[in-house]
Length: 119
Image 1 (cartoon, rainbow, N blue to C red):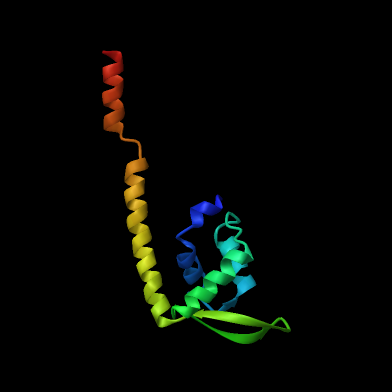
Image 2: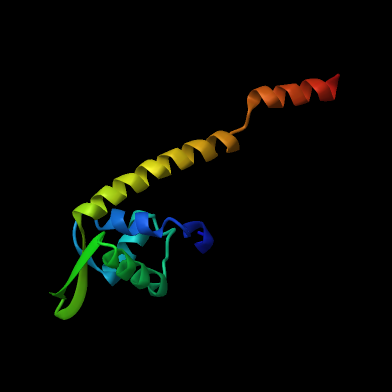
C-alpha cells in the first residue's frame, strides 16, 4: 500500500489497534500488519512519534512493563482516546461514503454517453 495513503489516518489506526488491549510499540506494528492482511507495513519511525504525540494529547497512556523478559513501554487507550476513536470512525464512514459515491460508475451517465455516441 502506498505510504502516502496512510497520511491523516495513522492516529485512527493506532487507536483502533489499542482498543482491545495495551501493547508495546513493536506489537502495535505487528497488529497493524496482521489486521490489514499484510498490506500495512508501517516503519517504526512513523509509529513511535505518533504514539508519543497521542500520549501528549491524552489519547494514550503508557507505562513500562516487562514483556518476554524485556522492558518495553506499553501503550493503552484512555477514555478521551476512545472518544477520539469513535469520532475517527464516524469521520471515516462519512469520507468513504462521499468518495465511494463519486468513484462509483454512474450507469445513468454511461447510458447517456452510449446513446449520444450511437446517435
